[in-house]
Structures are given as structure tokens and as C-alpha cells.
Length: 217
Image (cartoon, rainbow, N blue to C red; front, side):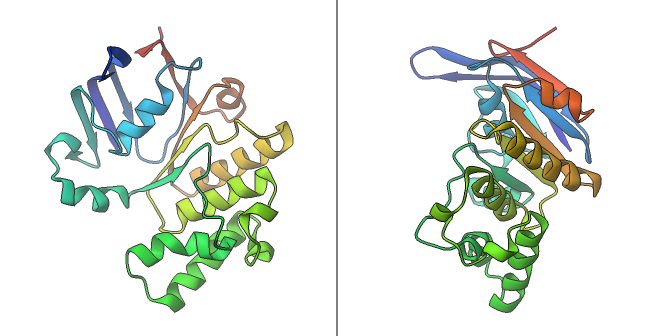
């Protein structure tokens, strides 16, 4: 599903975020990327999703070498991914349903089908009754669940989440992880970057641990 070999990422100014990272993630796995703040977790997530290119090394997703893809092909590759960010990136001038509809509108789905799928996604995360609510009226946990609904409405094969529980209380964080576990159980590949290693142990998932940009021993 995802294979990276000898991947490094350096930013202007000399910052090395990742150094010679090699790992494999199989289809249907649930994997936690862990490490201290600044270990390179978010960078690795961005490289997997082709949001940023590696400085060196190769990343292969579903048999496609990302370095060989033309820019016009990247939006189609990204349809394999559902992305959940720590800051959610919700649109506060649209209600919950309209936020979830956005990815389907971008690919031109018919409005009737798109609405049914968006409602189903909201139902999966327990927010169908809040479909008309503006995100500002939702709690932090509800906003994160809304972000997950938007991420999965396109039925991605891979769900990528970057610190999805960082700003939540323990109960809300546990609820978010239960949602990820439910998607994993139906065959979705789930990759979660988190600074809190306790979650990987509780979910019985595989852990990729980073230490200052390198794979930890």
C-alpha cells in the first residue's frame, strides 16, 4: 500500500525533518507514527499524501512512485486518501453538511448522491442530528468528528490523521480513536501521527517511532 525507502526531507535553512527513513505499511493496517514534538511525524504524513516531496529517497503508494507522477496526476492520487488535520481546516461560513459535501462537489458528484453520502458520513461519526449546525457551534470533539466525516465521505482507501486528538480531553480523544478503529475494522488503512504513544498500545496497532527525524531503534 505505502512503501518509503531512504526518505529524507530537508527544508531551506538547513533543517532536517527526516533522515533516511524506510518503512512499509500494508493495506488494511492500523499504524501509529509516534515520537516527540519535532520528531518528523507531520512531515512523514505530508510526504505520504504527496503534499510535499521528499528531498531524497522514494515513496510508492498503491504501486505508483510519487516522484514519477506529473502534477496533474496528484489530485487523482489524493483521492485515495482521507486527511484529518489537527486544526481541522473546517469552513466556518458553511454548516456541517456543507463542509462534508465539499470534497464531493470538487469531483462533480451529482447533488442527490452527494447529499446521501454526506449524510451517511455524518451518521457514522454521530453528527447527523447536527447537520445544519455551523462548526463554531460544535465542541472540539464534534469539530474533529466533522473533519473525519469530511475525510471519509469520498470512501478513501487510506485515512491519514495528523495529531487528531492533540487538543481534546481524554474522553473526546478516546471517542475519536474508537471511530478510527471502526474504519480500520472495515478494511480502511489507518495511519495516525501522535505524540502520545499510549494510544498505539491501547489500540493494539503497529507503531512507527521517530526520534529526531530518524527511525527509533
